[in-house]
Length: 342
Image 1 (cartoon, helix red, strand yellow):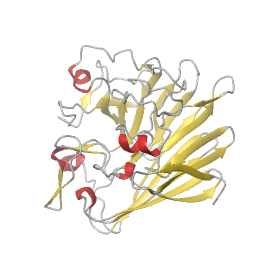
Image 2: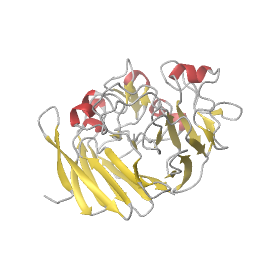
Image 3: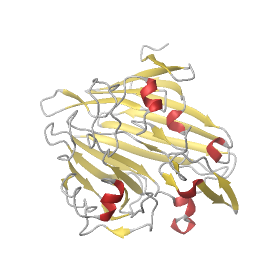
């Protein structure tokens, strides 16, 4: 076994979970085979001291038992699908619901709860491989996925590649919870997002429309502001989700482009998010479980982190008018997101 790979306990079914250490310059990351989750990401602050900027649990059981999907690769379809159903080429598929009547993040045994096969490329890169069988959680087609995590001189690059043998859905993202100070509330973190529109939702967090103007609402981050500046505003959308939990529609640009910038107010660490995805789900950790099985032994609290999940709009399988998102045999799903630190 490579010195980069060490044991990280066992999953509930007894299979061993492994931890992989990645290094590049002054950056270090730890990722685990359960859910291909990012366990830690250490970057230097303004004084050069390493700060772990992501939340994580200290054992596989905490990942499997808690909601939240800390650091996990989520899919086969990230975010929510109303009624846990979809239609592909005129055929209706009934998906496995795991949030009331909805499906969230691919269902109860989505990718975040699967064991991935690691392939060490070098000291800074690991490839995770997984094959999702036809019919898993209701999705058609055998999906073969490779997720490549690379620690660059600037940050962490996540590249997803998937192929199928039947028409299916594929929408992958990373669900890391970021705190650029290494702990405490993120409400004073400053955030800028290149998004002039957002996706409004109903009480079940299902979109009521693809797009609404963000200007003059709490969802306007086109001018950098503290995350907490408007989170308590008298706004029905924020009340429905107990904070931010909304898709921000990124300004269309080709290829990998700057989508968001997050700044830790005490560490002065700046994280830029680059992506080729059309949307970014902004989530302010509104429902973190009170569990001491954290990396520090101190339970996480509400709004102790922020998620910037790059992805397709929620419930897009039920809205073909929003665009064709079907992955077909012979085609390749490829998406990239980078978290770069300044």
